Image 1 (cartoon, rainbow, N blue to C red):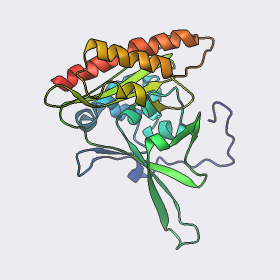
Image 2 (spheres, rainbow, N blue to C red):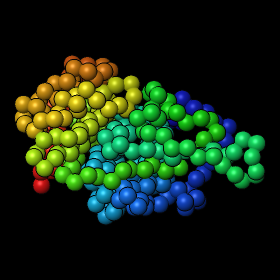
Image 3 (cartoon, rainbow, N blue to C red):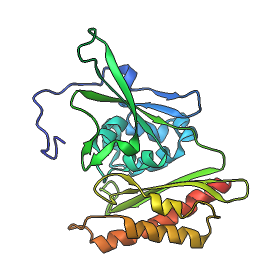
Image 4 (cartoon, rainbow, N blue to C red):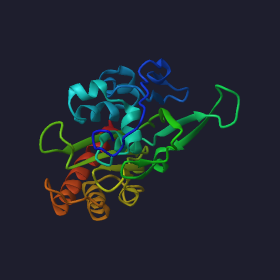
Length: 259
């Protein structure tokens, strides 16, 4: 926000010294709790993350450059609410929730109030989230993956490390008969907010993820997304990328669910 000249705060608070915000923990249910200050670089290298949420490890190398990944945080990316960022789309696909804290208003000194919010309800607009001015995002909770579940991510950018012209994250869960029981698809740079493509994902549920079914979901994504045209790509070209990437990513996720 500072780089974009969209914010000019009178004071900045350094959170680097708060160790409680920088941990990666496995939850009792087998999911993950990521502290808001976990660096993006850790998503690439942490074996626990690779085991419990491989989609995060797969998408992390696409984010900016190594220098930025070494300093940028997971919580910062989510709170920034940039529709062109990879992490919001990936975490939406995984069904993540955010933990938010604030100081208790009128309570005992040092007391605080916490709330948990589905990430799907967190993003309200471009660079605009449900965080109140006196609130702090403290952690992101990722639910455990289900058996026979596969995930995948891919994007297209003009150069490695540039903002994606379009990107897609997908999650597919199959039942014992190979039929899709659950699916989720999210887009990078597919609209004014990070968003789930619910209608497109719903077309996959209840049938086997055949090439025809996957192509139908990809066509639905391209038809219902809302990409913006700019000097880098037209709206039509971005829709073409969404369709191509969705087919590729959903197919890869389905293959992984079968293995």
